[in-house]
Every structure is written in C-alpha cells, then in structure tokens.
Amino acid sequence: MDYSVDGLVPTTIESPKTLDELSGCLAEATGTKQSVIPWGGGTRMCIGNVPRAYDVALDTTNLINTLEHVPGDMTVVVDAGVRVKQLEDVLAKSGQRLAFEIKRSNDSTIGGAVASNASGRRQSSTGGIRDWVIGMQIVLPDGTVTKSGGRVVKNVQGYELHRLHTGAFGTLGVISQVALKLQPLPTESQSVLTWFDDLEAASKMGAGLYNSVFTPEATSSVQGSALIPLIELCGEQASADVKSAVLVRVSGGVRSVERQVNEIKVISGTNGSIGFAVLDKAANDSAWKTIESQEVDSTLSVRITARNQTVTELAGRLTSQYSEDEVSAVTDLGFGAATLTCTLKNLERESAVANGIIDAAQKSGCSYTVENCSTDLKKSLDVFSEVGPAIELMRRVKNQYDPTSLLNPGRFVGKI
Image (tube, rainbow, N blue to C red; front, top):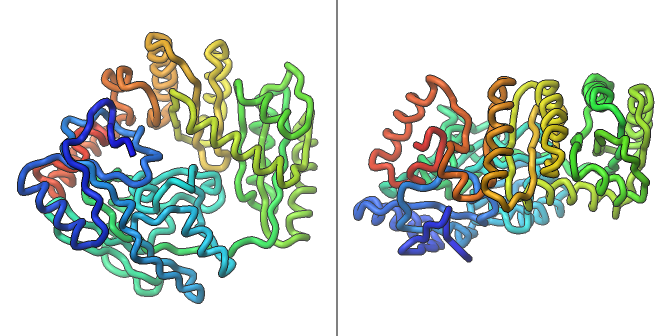
C-alpha cells in the first residue's frame, strides 16, 4: 500500500495486530514526539488538509481479532480493521445488516468508516453512522485505552464520548473497536429511475416521496454530465431536454415493495416526469454503482450540506453554471447533502471550479467539505467549511486529548 498523504511519505510504517501493540505504537510515538497518521483501508485518506508533519503511518487493517455478532440483541462488536463487506457478509447469514451503507465496502474498514463518518445512500432513511454506534474502544495518543458506551443497547450509559470520535478523523485517538446496532435484512428490494426536463419538478417529486405514506430506503437525484449515461445504462433513451433524474430504492416484503413502486409511479407522473423505469437486478446494481463511481473516481469532489431544498437548488444551478467542465451532482434527497464532482487536469480551472462551488455554498448557508482535489489546490484552502466560534471549543478538546498535536496534525477542521 502507498502510505503517502498529499505528497508526504512516512519514515516508519506500523501495523499492530493486537490492542497492546497498538497502544505500544502510540506510546512510543508520543515519547519520541513523532507525528502519526492512522490508516484503515485508505478509501477516504484524500479527505483532510495537508499534514503539518508525517512520521508514522499507523495501519490498523490487521486489527481483526474480534467480530462478535449477537443476533438476538441485533448488535455486533467488531475490531477496527475488519472490512465493511466482510462484516456485511457475516451479518447477512443471520438476516441482518448494517443500518448504513459505505462506498467501496470491499476496501473500507469499520474503523476508518466510523472515524470519517462516511456517508452512504441509506442515510436519507436511517441517518448516519453516528446514530448507530453504541460503544467504542479508543487508544489515546499516549497509549491509554479508553472505552465509551456499551456492547448492547440496554447497557449504554454515561457520556456518549464515542460520538466525539465519530467523524473526528482520528485526531483525538485511534478507534480500535466499535459496537453497533443493526437492522433486519429486508426480504425484497427494488429501484426505480424517473427523469424530468425541469429541475423544480424533480425537486417536488423528491419532496413528495418524503411526504408520502412510506419512506424510501434511498433517494438520489442526479444532474450534470452523469445524467444521460445513467438513463442509458437502464436501457432507456434520454433526450437533450433531460435536466434531472431521481433514483429511488425501496425495500420490505414483496407486496410492500410492489405498493411502494406503484406509489412512486403516481408521484412521478403527478410531478410531470418524462421517463420512468423499474430496474431489474443488473440495472439496479449498475445504476447505484454508477453514482458511487461518479463520487469516488473524480479528481475534484465537493460535498455540501444544508436544508434539502437549498442543496437541491444549488446543485442544479452549479451543474448548469459549470456544464462545460462536465460537473455532476448527486444529491441525497431527504438528507440535505449533495456531492459535486468533475475531473479536471488543469490546476487553474480546478481552482476556479472548486472556489466557485465553495463560494456558492457559503452564500447559500451550506456547509462543505472538499473530499478530493489536487494537493496543489489543497495547499491554498481549508477543505472543511468554517465552524464559527465552535472552533475554539474544538481546539480545547484537541489539546485535552492530544496536547502535543501528534495525531493527524493540521488535517482536521480549522487545520487543527
């Protein structure tokens, strides 16, 4: 594995296999004042500001000793290095699943997904990772092992400090083990794609879904350069008039799924869709993978969050404004988040598009994260949006947990 981060390479690579080894690695690094960047599967290492220093790459993928699934309690306790897909396969044997989805699940680790609060399609209906973590084991920079929460829901008590570490990108401590609540695996799942020649109509259709008698498992709208290929891979023809498509996934019992699909047809038609397709399994897999690939394979990726209507309108406006740069937008309806992507090799143009998206996001009251961009561009900005006065509290928390600032130095919000 290439452990470089924004052009920096470590002098040492550590791959602990046990909790004691992980604790020892961190204690030694702190004692010698070496900066440490934790690594999981590496799928989200592109997120974060340029490090101030980088001495030790701490690979957690060998922390795979624990995977304790208790089907009766609908919980699982798992070490940080276990791959998400491996865990999903184990849970499926008992008719259960993770409540959240993770992109590139074959490579992603549980620890990395939790540390980066990774987003996925089902967050529109089930919320994010933070809502499903009930316990956590963390190793602090000095090697101290701490625990928060519990292994089963009824035993969770005290301060929920695991929420502090979810999405902290490993700046406060290294996650070594996580306890999660689970969901039943649905009997049936079906996806529907519908498309529009009017952005406002597509937005109303999305809103209509979340005001109906059921909640879709996942709903994503697509604008920009990815739009036509998405429609065509479903075996349908798309005209140049198409402005937006809405991809919806529903799940449940067989009859329940049939009713939901029929309801989607009604809502789609009521809002003036110009095309509609119920996807077979092959097209279903291809459609969602196309969306995922659009987000993870682009050289520039900016995720914006705000109220659902604000994000939807902004995504439509920006894809139109930067159509010559083939900017695409995938919006998670019901959650208020959109990822705008494109592939640009010219730094000047990349900078213009990225700063244009950031400026528009700020003016619309949106938060943003530049999830991927060139290192040269990253050096000129903070990839995380400003958090206002809260930054001082965040700095105090960082100082409390990592007083020598050796964990991921400079990579988090405000270049903490």
